[in-house]
Image 1: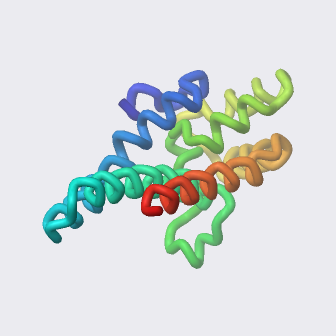
Image 2: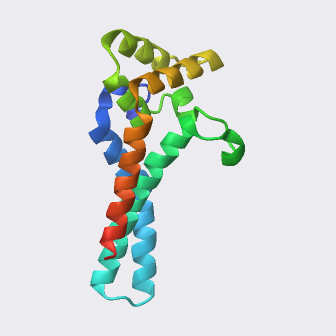
Length: 154
């Protein structure tokens, strides 16, 4: 599912969320609901653990995608811009593209679709993400998924 949309910014946020649901969220949900089941919890607790895990997994993946662009590589232990470099249409890339004016959209798309990106290309993509103002709204979206996770346990 994810490989089919590499270098494709038109896939959109709904597709992104479906990929995250099937990739990260389903793993976290299965792990947490399995632990609850193994502990002998009632079905309502097992279901709540799964719902918590799903929302937590989505929050985590959105945050991880943000850290790929805005994180500290020394703290993360990995270089920045891996998703940009690989043409992975994360929420950062999708929202950057959607929020830019047509001229900058064309520039971002051209850079995003390059198979071999130089450091200067990646830095320019980050500058365009900054110009689009995506960091705050995407951080908020991650926080909202985390809050949804917490409400599942209430």
